[in-house]
Amino acid sequence: MIQFQDVTKTFGSRTAVNRASFNIDRPQMVGIIGRSGAGKSTLLRMINRLTPATSGQILFEGRDILSLRGGMMRRWQRDCAMVFQQFNLVPRLDVVTNVMLGRLNGHGTLKSLFNVFSADDVNSALAALDRLGIAQEATKRAEELSGGQQQRVAIARALMQDPHMILADEPIASLDPMNAKIVMDSLRQIHERDNKIVLCNLHTLDTARSYCDRVIGMRDGFIVFDGKPDELTTEAAREIYGADESFNEAATSTAIDTGQSGFKESAGAMAPAAAAV
Ligand SMILES: Nc1ncnc2c1ncn2[C@@H]1O[C@H](COP(=O)(O)OP(=O)(O)OP(=O)(O)O)[C@@H](O)[C@H]1O
Image 1 (cartoon, rainbow, N blue to C red):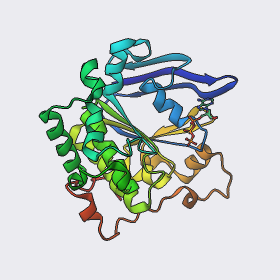
Image 2: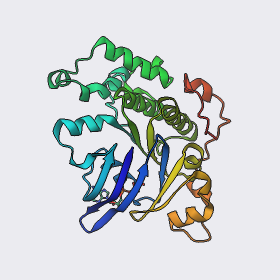
Image 3: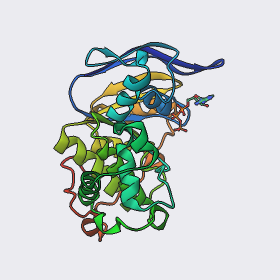
Image 4: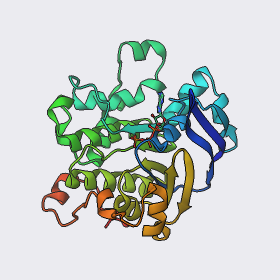
Protein backbone atom coordinates (compact mmCIF):
# COMPACT_ATOMS: atom_id res chain seq x y z
CA MET A 1 0.00 0.00 0.00
CA ILE A 2 2.47 2.65 1.17
CA GLN A 3 6.21 2.52 0.63
CA PHE A 4 8.83 4.85 2.07
CA GLN A 5 12.13 4.65 0.25
CA ASP A 6 15.08 6.55 1.70
CA VAL A 7 12.95 9.54 2.61
CA THR A 8 14.91 12.46 4.04
CA LYS A 9 13.88 15.90 5.24
CA THR A 10 16.39 18.56 6.13
CA PHE A 11 15.71 21.98 7.61
CA GLY A 12 18.90 23.91 6.92
CA SER A 13 21.67 21.93 8.57
CA ARG A 14 19.21 19.91 10.68
CA THR A 15 18.14 16.50 9.36
CA ALA A 16 14.68 15.90 10.80
CA VAL A 17 14.12 12.57 9.02
CA ASN A 18 17.11 10.59 7.82
CA ARG A 19 16.69 8.02 5.01
CA ALA A 20 13.49 6.51 6.37
CA SER A 21 12.45 3.30 4.63
CA PHE A 22 9.48 1.08 5.48
CA ASN A 23 6.41 -0.47 3.87
CA ILE A 24 2.86 -0.78 5.07
CA ASP A 25 1.41 -3.50 2.90
CA ARG A 26 -2.03 -3.89 4.51
CA PRO A 27 -4.30 -1.71 6.61
CA GLN A 28 -2.56 -1.50 9.96
CA MET A 29 -2.67 0.76 12.96
CA VAL A 30 0.92 1.94 13.29
CA GLY A 31 2.22 3.90 16.25
CA ILE A 32 5.26 6.13 15.82
CA ILE A 33 7.12 6.80 19.02
CA GLY A 34 10.27 8.66 20.01
CA ARG A 35 11.52 11.61 22.00
CA SER A 36 10.48 15.13 21.24
CA GLY A 37 12.33 16.24 18.08
CA ALA A 38 12.91 12.66 16.85
CA GLY A 39 11.16 13.45 13.54
CA LYS A 40 7.71 11.92 14.08
CA SER A 41 5.63 14.90 12.94
CA THR A 42 7.86 15.56 9.97
CA LEU A 43 7.43 11.94 8.87
CA LEU A 44 3.64 12.22 8.94
CA ARG A 45 3.55 15.66 7.37
CA MET A 46 5.63 14.48 4.42
CA ILE A 47 3.02 11.82 3.65
CA ASN A 48 0.23 14.30 3.08
CA ARG A 49 2.58 16.90 1.61
CA LEU A 50 2.25 19.49 4.37
CA THR A 51 6.05 19.33 4.54
CA PRO A 52 7.98 18.77 1.31
CA ALA A 53 10.49 15.90 1.45
CA THR A 54 14.08 16.76 0.56
CA SER A 55 14.81 13.42 -1.11
CA GLY A 56 13.54 9.87 -1.43
CA GLN A 57 10.25 8.44 -2.58
CA ILE A 58 6.85 7.84 -1.04
CA LEU A 59 4.63 5.53 -3.08
CA PHE A 60 0.98 4.77 -2.44
CA GLU A 61 -0.18 1.74 -4.39
CA GLY A 62 2.71 2.35 -6.74
CA ARG A 63 1.88 6.05 -7.27
CA ASP A 64 4.62 8.59 -6.62
CA ILE A 65 3.09 10.84 -3.97
CA LEU A 66 5.88 13.40 -3.84
CA SER A 67 5.47 14.39 -7.49
CA LEU A 68 1.72 15.15 -7.28
CA ARG A 69 0.77 18.74 -8.16
CA GLY A 70 -2.37 20.93 -8.20
CA GLY A 71 -5.68 19.08 -8.14
CA MET A 72 -3.98 15.68 -7.88
CA MET A 73 -2.14 16.83 -4.76
CA ARG A 74 -5.32 18.22 -3.19
CA ARG A 75 -7.08 14.97 -3.96
CA TRP A 76 -4.25 13.09 -2.24
CA GLN A 77 -4.46 15.39 0.77
CA ARG A 78 -8.12 14.49 1.03
CA ASP A 79 -7.20 10.80 0.84
CA CYS A 80 -4.92 11.03 3.87
CA ALA A 81 -6.77 12.99 6.52
CA MET A 82 -4.75 14.62 9.32
CA VAL A 83 -5.79 14.81 12.96
CA PHE A 84 -3.74 17.26 15.03
CA GLN A 85 -2.88 17.61 18.70
CA GLN A 86 -4.64 20.98 18.89
CA PHE A 87 -7.71 19.76 16.93
CA ASN A 88 -7.56 22.64 14.38
CA LEU A 89 -11.29 23.35 14.47
CA VAL A 90 -12.84 26.73 13.71
CA PRO A 91 -13.79 27.70 17.30
CA ARG A 92 -16.75 29.97 16.52
CA LEU A 93 -18.34 27.70 13.94
CA ASP A 94 -20.85 25.11 15.05
CA VAL A 95 -19.77 21.51 15.32
CA VAL A 96 -21.65 20.18 12.30
CA THR A 97 -20.19 22.89 10.02
CA ASN A 98 -16.72 22.10 11.31
CA VAL A 99 -17.27 18.48 10.33
CA MET A 100 -18.60 19.45 6.89
CA LEU A 101 -15.40 21.39 6.25
CA GLY A 102 -13.89 17.95 5.66
CA ARG A 103 -15.84 17.91 2.40
CA LEU A 104 -14.55 21.24 1.07
CA ASN A 105 -11.72 19.72 -0.89
CA GLY A 106 -14.22 17.59 -2.76
CA HIS A 107 -16.36 20.54 -3.85
CA GLY A 108 -15.83 22.86 -6.79
CA THR A 109 -14.12 26.20 -6.09
CA LEU A 110 -17.34 28.24 -6.01
CA LYS A 111 -19.09 25.91 -3.62
CA SER A 112 -16.03 25.83 -1.40
CA LEU A 113 -15.76 29.62 -1.46
CA PHE A 114 -19.26 30.07 -0.09
CA ASN A 115 -19.29 27.01 2.18
CA VAL A 116 -22.29 25.61 0.32
CA PHE A 117 -23.25 22.28 1.80
CA SER A 118 -25.95 19.93 0.58
CA ALA A 119 -28.49 18.04 2.67
CA ASP A 120 -26.37 14.99 1.96
CA ASP A 121 -23.32 16.75 3.50
CA VAL A 122 -25.34 17.59 6.62
CA ASN A 123 -26.60 14.01 6.95
CA SER A 124 -23.11 12.56 6.48
CA ALA A 125 -21.70 14.97 9.08
CA LEU A 126 -24.40 14.01 11.57
CA ALA A 127 -23.74 10.32 10.90
CA ALA A 128 -20.00 10.84 11.48
CA LEU A 129 -20.72 12.69 14.74
CA ASP A 130 -23.08 9.94 15.79
CA ARG A 131 -20.36 7.38 15.16
CA LEU A 132 -18.09 9.33 17.45
CA GLY A 133 -20.82 9.53 20.08
CA ILE A 134 -21.26 13.32 19.98
CA ALA A 135 -24.18 13.94 17.62
CA GLN A 136 -25.96 15.67 20.49
CA GLU A 137 -23.33 18.44 20.35
CA ALA A 138 -23.89 19.17 16.64
CA THR A 139 -25.34 22.66 17.05
CA LYS A 140 -22.91 23.92 19.70
CA ARG A 141 -19.96 26.09 18.81
CA ALA A 142 -16.75 24.05 18.68
CA GLU A 143 -15.16 26.25 21.38
CA GLU A 144 -17.87 25.21 23.84
CA LEU A 145 -16.73 21.57 23.78
CA SER A 146 -14.16 19.85 25.98
CA GLY A 147 -10.79 18.92 24.48
CA GLY A 148 -11.79 15.28 24.12
CA GLN A 149 -15.04 16.21 22.39
CA GLN A 150 -13.19 18.61 20.08
CA GLN A 151 -10.79 15.86 19.09
CA ARG A 152 -13.74 13.61 18.28
CA VAL A 153 -15.18 16.39 16.09
CA ALA A 154 -11.80 16.57 14.34
CA ILE A 155 -11.92 12.81 13.75
CA ALA A 156 -15.48 13.10 12.40
CA ARG A 157 -14.21 15.82 10.04
CA ALA A 158 -11.46 13.44 8.92
CA LEU A 159 -14.07 10.74 8.26
CA MET A 160 -16.02 13.20 6.06
CA GLN A 161 -13.05 13.17 3.70
CA ASP A 162 -13.60 9.43 3.23
CA PRO A 163 -9.81 9.03 3.35
CA HIS A 164 -7.66 6.00 2.55
CA MET A 165 -5.74 6.62 5.76
CA ILE A 166 -5.74 8.73 8.87
CA LEU A 167 -2.57 10.47 10.01
CA ALA A 168 -2.89 11.44 13.66
CA ASP A 169 -0.16 13.71 15.01
CA GLU A 170 -0.14 13.28 18.78
CA PRO A 171 -3.93 13.17 18.95
CA ILE A 172 -4.04 12.58 22.71
CA ALA A 173 -1.16 14.77 23.87
CA SER A 174 -3.53 17.49 25.15
CA LEU A 175 -6.08 15.17 26.71
CA ASP A 176 -6.65 13.68 30.14
CA PRO A 177 -6.44 9.87 30.39
CA MET A 178 -10.17 9.23 30.04
CA ASN A 179 -10.54 11.39 26.94
CA ALA A 180 -7.29 9.96 25.58
CA LYS A 181 -8.81 6.50 25.83
CA ILE A 182 -12.02 7.56 24.07
CA VAL A 183 -10.03 9.13 21.22
CA MET A 184 -7.70 6.12 20.86
CA ASP A 185 -10.70 3.76 20.92
CA SER A 186 -12.25 5.86 18.14
CA LEU A 187 -9.13 5.65 15.98
CA ARG A 188 -8.79 1.91 16.59
CA GLN A 189 -12.43 1.36 15.69
CA ILE A 190 -12.05 3.32 12.44
CA HIS A 191 -9.06 1.15 11.59
CA GLU A 192 -10.90 -2.08 12.34
CA ARG A 193 -14.35 -1.28 11.00
CA ASP A 194 -13.34 0.68 7.90
CA ASN A 195 -10.14 -1.27 7.26
CA LYS A 196 -8.09 1.93 7.03
CA ILE A 197 -4.44 2.59 7.72
CA VAL A 198 -4.06 4.69 10.86
CA LEU A 199 -0.62 6.19 11.46
CA CYS A 200 -0.44 7.75 14.87
CA ASN A 201 2.36 9.68 16.58
CA LEU A 202 2.37 8.93 20.26
CA HIS A 203 4.40 10.04 23.22
CA THR A 204 3.44 7.12 25.37
CA LEU A 205 4.70 3.55 25.12
CA ASP A 206 1.76 1.95 26.84
CA THR A 207 -0.69 3.53 24.38
CA ALA A 208 1.36 2.32 21.42
CA ARG A 209 1.49 -1.19 22.86
CA SER A 210 -2.21 -1.29 23.64
CA TYR A 211 -3.63 0.09 20.43
CA CYS A 212 -1.19 -0.51 17.59
CA ASP A 213 -0.49 -3.55 15.43
CA ARG A 214 2.98 -2.24 14.77
CA VAL A 215 5.30 0.28 16.34
CA ILE A 216 7.94 2.37 14.60
CA GLY A 217 10.52 3.97 16.87
CA MET A 218 12.43 7.09 15.79
CA ARG A 219 15.56 8.57 17.24
CA ASP A 220 17.35 11.65 15.89
CA GLY A 221 15.58 11.30 12.52
CA PHE A 222 16.38 7.59 12.09
CA ILE A 223 14.00 4.68 12.31
CA VAL A 224 15.63 2.57 15.02
CA PHE A 225 12.77 0.17 15.74
CA ASP A 226 10.05 -1.40 13.60
CA GLY A 227 8.18 -4.30 15.11
CA LYS A 228 5.19 -5.73 16.89
CA PRO A 229 4.09 -4.20 20.19
CA ASP A 230 5.27 -7.24 22.15
CA GLU A 231 8.76 -6.79 20.69
CA LEU A 232 8.89 -3.35 22.24
CA THR A 233 10.80 -4.43 25.32
CA THR A 234 12.17 -2.02 27.90
CA GLU A 235 15.57 -2.49 26.26
CA ALA A 236 14.15 -1.56 22.82
CA ALA A 237 12.45 1.44 24.39
CA ARG A 238 15.75 2.53 25.95
CA GLU A 239 17.33 2.43 22.51
CA ILE A 240 14.53 4.54 21.01
CA TYR A 241 14.51 7.09 23.80
CA GLY A 242 18.28 7.13 24.13
CA ALA A 243 18.01 6.47 27.83
CA ASP A 244 20.32 4.59 30.19
CA GLU A 245 19.64 1.94 32.84
CA SER A 246 17.62 4.42 34.84
CA PHE A 247 15.01 4.63 32.04
CA ASN A 248 11.58 4.41 33.57
CA GLU A 249 8.69 3.54 31.29
CA ALA A 250 6.26 5.20 33.62
CA ALA A 251 7.70 8.50 32.43
CA THR A 252 6.21 7.82 28.99
CA SER A 253 2.87 6.61 30.32
CA THR A 254 -0.52 8.28 30.20
CA ALA A 255 -1.80 5.53 32.49
CA ILE A 256 -5.09 5.29 30.65
CA ASP A 257 -7.43 3.79 33.18
CA THR A 258 -10.01 1.63 31.40
CA GLY A 259 -11.98 1.29 34.58
CA GLN A 260 -13.02 4.97 34.61
CA SER A 261 -16.71 5.30 35.12
CA GLY A 262 -18.60 7.29 32.52
CA PHE A 263 -16.50 6.04 29.62
CA LYS A 264 -19.22 4.01 27.95
CA GLU A 265 -21.64 6.87 28.15
CA SER A 266 -19.25 9.42 26.71
CA ALA A 267 -18.03 7.03 24.03
CA GLY A 268 -21.55 6.87 22.65
CA ALA A 269 -21.88 4.48 19.73
CA MET A 270 -18.23 3.51 19.75
CA ALA A 271 -17.40 -0.09 20.57
CA PRO A 272 -14.23 -0.49 22.66
CA ALA A 273 -11.35 -1.61 20.48
CA ALA A 274 -10.45 -5.27 20.63
CA ALA A 275 -6.86 -4.36 21.29
CA ALA A 276 -7.65 -1.83 23.96
CA VAL A 277 -6.18 -2.30 27.38
N1 LIG B 1 9.53 23.95 10.07
C1 LIG B 1 10.69 23.62 10.66
N2 LIG B 1 11.77 24.40 10.54
C2 LIG B 1 12.95 24.08 11.10
N3 LIG B 1 13.15 22.95 11.84
C3 LIG B 1 12.10 22.13 12.00
C4 LIG B 1 10.82 22.41 11.42
N4 LIG B 1 9.98 21.39 11.74
C5 LIG B 1 10.69 20.54 12.49
N5 LIG B 1 11.96 20.97 12.64
C6 LIG B 1 13.03 20.28 13.38
O1 LIG B 1 13.08 18.95 12.92
C7 LIG B 1 13.31 18.06 14.02
C8 LIG B 1 12.17 17.05 14.08
O2 LIG B 1 10.97 17.73 14.44
P1 LIG B 1 9.57 16.99 14.55
O3 LIG B 1 8.55 18.01 14.90
O4 LIG B 1 9.35 16.17 13.34
O5 LIG B 1 9.83 16.01 15.80
P2 LIG B 1 8.80 15.24 16.70
O6 LIG B 1 9.39 13.91 16.96
O7 LIG B 1 7.45 15.25 16.05
O8 LIG B 1 8.78 16.09 18.01
P3 LIG B 1 7.56 16.42 19.02
O9 LIG B 1 7.24 15.11 19.65
O10 LIG B 1 8.13 17.42 19.97
O11 LIG B 1 6.44 16.95 18.18
C9 LIG B 1 13.41 18.93 15.26
O12 LIG B 1 14.77 19.17 15.51
C10 LIG B 1 12.72 20.21 14.85
O13 LIG B 1 13.25 21.30 15.54
